[in-house]
Amino acid sequence: MQLSSSLRRNHISPWLVGRTIIASLVLMAGAGNAQDRGQGAVGSQPSIASAKSVHAEQETHWQVVETANFTVYCVGEPGAAVNLADHCESLRARLQHKWFGDSFSATAWRPRCLVVLHPTRTSYLQAVGPAGTQTSGTSHIEARDSAITYRRIDLCGFRVGQETAALPHELTHVVFADRFRDRPVPPWANEGAAVLADPAEKQQLHLRDLREALAEKTTFTVGQLVELDRCPDGPQCGTFYGQSLSLVECLVRRGGPRTFVAFLDRSALVGNDRALEETYGTHGVRELDHVWREHASAPATEFVAEHTPRPASSAESAAD
Image (cartoon, rainbow, N blue to C red; front, side):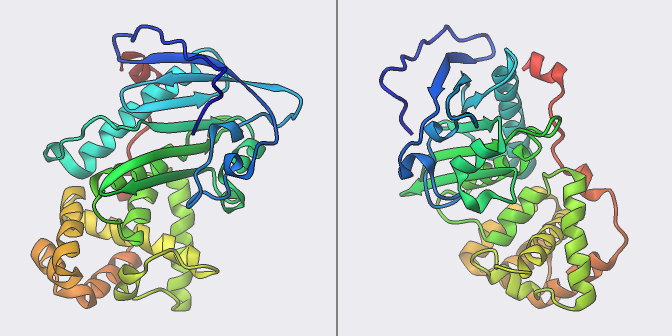
């Protein structure tokens, strides 16, 4: 992403919490080229130039705040970008501690993760492309030679009270990509862990899809699910998300988040069957399929909500 050379970055001395307000930018709304607009949540690199006002003749006044690990763009009341940036830092730390503990030495992200909170649905879709029509958040990550070269999260912030509801989900993807930078995270594990960070009501929608698939006997076997290299298209997409959430929940319930990560590490080296034996004492994916189906058919519990990182309160934001 490149900003116009006419936009001078006016650095202000960092605050005690390590924040730097870069500038209050005015990005002129314009058509832009195809590269600037971005053509998808995954695969094309969107540009901040595409995060523009819904009114083609108006200017969009972006607040821009830089912290140790994030550069945040948003439109709103004074201080909105500061609050969002603080929330991003706090949430990053909680997610890393939850999944990886103190054994994971998280260095500062370079490049920083770009977070854009779009003021309108039009602005959001111009940035992420038509693939984001049914979404309220997307993440875009690029890596080269086991190093992350680009991190970005786009959030659709036009719903009052729900502006950053998708942030924990998308930031989970970015945190996992940082931890597993030498190899891709299996899609079921990546999406299951991310949905585990979603609000409870969204999780219940995914689990509703799963219950319907269970009733219709159209679920994947666990062996099939863990071998998928992408989310399937069509009706099975809903089953994939619901079943991925349920399987990750099942494994985390049995051993905790860090044992789940240890399983992913081992499975990349020795395969799923042996990794399950070593980390969970389960005799391969066939036995796990039986274990998971018992779990999925059990009455719903509060487990999911208990393991969802809670949003930072205004008091925490002020204290960070």
